[in-house]
Image (cartoon, rainbow, N blue to C red; front, top):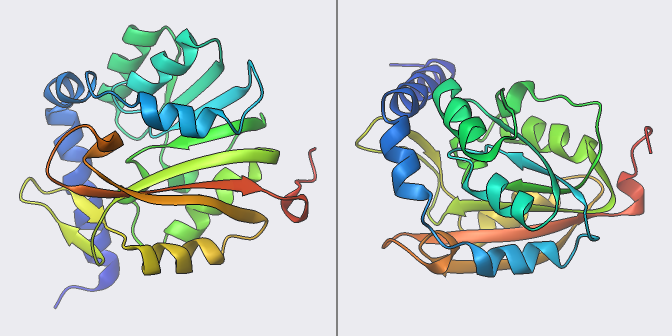
Length: 215
């Protein structure tokens, strides 16, 4: 019987292997997804020319979209191959970093974590959120999305997924100190534009209680 810790390691290895081996194919498949409707929902919480962190930036699709809209963007992803492709596409250096290790001296008005936190095991998710909230300015917005489902699983290609339904996500978000839930909605396909999978999305805003010591 494998322990939860060993299963988490196995899942992370499978996820990393997938993105390293399939980086080009994954990038090609995701670059054309139209996320404009979600951009509008997210960006209305941000001032013009805000600094945005693309957390789990993947192919660089969203980094490029925000850059082209006049925002100052930073990016990171756990996959070295995807970081290289993203950097080449956008001109924004994407750092190779996991959520569980993320640190920054910068503060952001917005953090975009689109279909990326879903690869973080549930027992490591609170720390991942803490690390993101720590670099978000008071009044700043955090967008997140997960595939809609009941819990942790492994896909046929070896990737680990943490799926969320509304009740589970509300419970998780209710334990994030200093953040208020502004919106939560379910879409059919990522951004509502592709695929048969349902996705659950949320936007949180940092309140005064969550104001960081560096602000």
